[in-house]
Length: 216
Ligand SMILES: [Zn+2]
Image 1 (tube, helix red, strand yellow):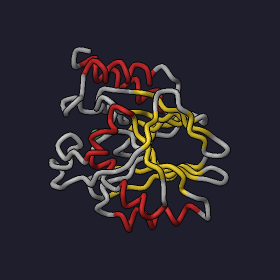
Image 2: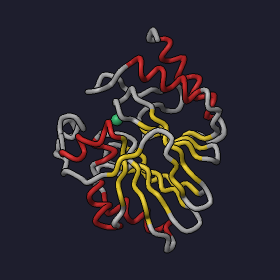
Image 3: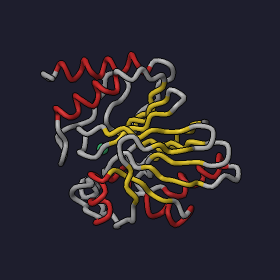
Image 4: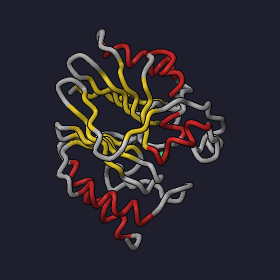
């Protein structure tokens, strides 16, 4: 698998284009405010491969706002956990944080993914891990190449997701990060900030220490 980070400069959110031999998937959709720029970067790397799936790490607007634009461009199927699907399907501006980001969210049609699902990328695969805490339906994706896509659950350098938004929960976040820390992954691809190559375990241990500092 080949991984390309695409930064949506509107709220500095990371999208990841994961390329297999003959297909590609995208992790998160960005805000949609800069969809031409995002599509340009996707097309620069696809090299004729179809973009087959859009996997959304959680319900928040900065990660899902661009969904319908990507569906229109690539006929891609958006997939999200059952727990975070309904605010996206309903275009719930409050629960997705769209109102907080100063906008609205267009309702989208999604398919549901769940813990243990494997997403085949052709020459590699990503496994869905249910990691609630930042939102109740937050997921991470674990690649069979040692990669881990974490959305807003955990960030490099001891950063952790906020648990004070709607459906967030400190104890769940703590359990999720404890689980991620035990995986022994190599590379960390967060929803915001610069990815970590080779030293993911160290960074996940720091995140755990951060939560312990909050009394976890
Ligand atoms: Zn978020």
